Length: 329
Image 1 (cartoon, rainbow, N blue to C red):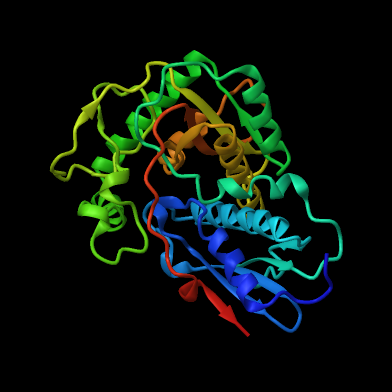
Image 2: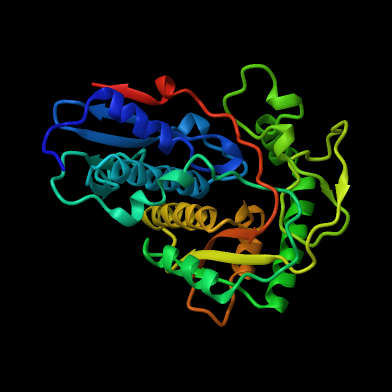
C-alpha cells in the first residue's frame, strides 16, 4: 500500500504483463501512457492495429484491450498496489479507454494477485483436447469469474453446441468468399517458421494447430487456404466443452467489461490446469451473430466463443517490446 507514484521500472513490468493478453489475430491493439508525477497509467486503443475488415466496429479491439486491462489489474495486485480504475474517462476521446490511478492506498486484491502466475502461462491451444466433460465445480468457478467482471458465462447444451459449430462453418464459408477478409487474416497469420525473423505480433505457423479431420470444434483455420508444409491432420474431441461469454448490452463499455471477464475466465482456467482456445468467427458477421446466443438464456449479446478442456498447451505468441507500448510523461 503506497501513496507514492510507482517508479518507471515497476510500471514497465505492469505493462509487460498487460501485453500478454489475447487479442484478435494477436494484433495487440493497445498503447499505454504513464504520468509519473501523478501515478496515473492510461490505456489507449492503437487504431493503427485495428482490423477494419474483420472487426469494423472495433468490438474485438475493445475486448483485447479489456483483457490487457485485466492483466494490468492482476499485475498491480501482485505488486502490492490497489489501483483505482475508470473506464472510458473521456467520451470525446474514444481511443482513451481506461486509466488506473496506481497510488491508491487500499488493500491489494488478493484474489487477483493469485492469478498472476497464469498471466504468462496462458496461451491459446488449437490442438485436440481430451474428450471429457468439465466437472460441474469447474464450470461454476468459471461462471463466477465472468460474473465478477459483470459478464455471463453460459455452457450451452449439446444441440446448441452443434448449432454453434454449424455457424462457425457458415462464417468460414463467408470468409472464403470475402477476399478482403482473407487478405487481412493472411496479413496477421504468418505461415513461415515462428512468423519470420523478428516477428513481434500476429499468429505464428506453430500456433495454427493441425487441420481437423471432422469439423467438431470451433477452431479458426488461420492458414486461410494457404499451403503450410508439414502441417498434419488430427481428430479433435467429438463433444467439445464450449462456453459463451456475453453481456446484457453491446456498447464499448460492455466490450471492455467482456474483455476483462474473458481474461479472468482464461486465467482462472489456466490456474485450474485447463487449456483454451477462443474464436469470434461467427460473431464477426452481424447476420449470423444473433443466432449464436441461446434464446432461452438471459444473455443479450454473445461476445466470445470459448473452447475449454485438458490437452497440450499452445505455443507462446510473439509480443511487442514494452518500449513500443509505453510512453512516459
